Image 1 (cartoon, one colour):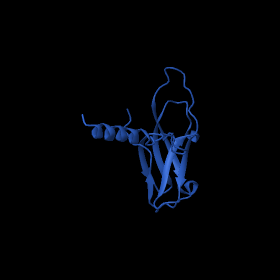
Image 2 (cartoon, rainbow, N blue to C red; image 1 turned 180 degrees about the vertical axis):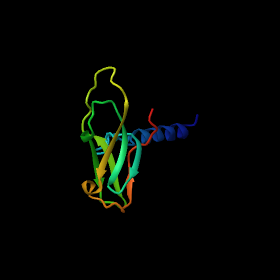
Image 3 (cartoon, rainbow, N blue to C red; image 1 turned 60 degrees about the vertical axis):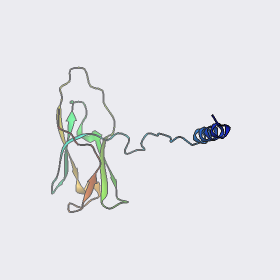
Image 4 (cartoon, one colour; image 1 turned 90 degrees about the vertical axis):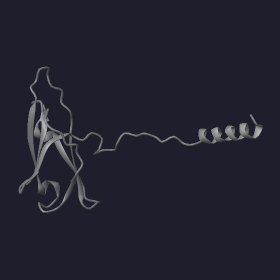
Length: 121
């Protein structure tokens, strides 16, 4: 092996070692943990969403986060807190309505919903 090739290989490896590695951070609130939605519908009275329910989390624990700094406004829905449920609690679905006035949005305004969507298992 030629000394120049060896020197260039060493310099290349040294340059790679000095590159900064990207830092992985947890998402800042409100996007840390978005609730999976099992259905949604924009109605005259507000946005109606379906979430998985185990009987231990009331509708009041689901909170909306609206970001009006962009157009269209973005909306995400998360649980305020996770309540532990006793073993064997049944699973079902819960319908939660968020009035447009409570979201600070008009019924005719377009929004971008950020939550994941899935079929109820």
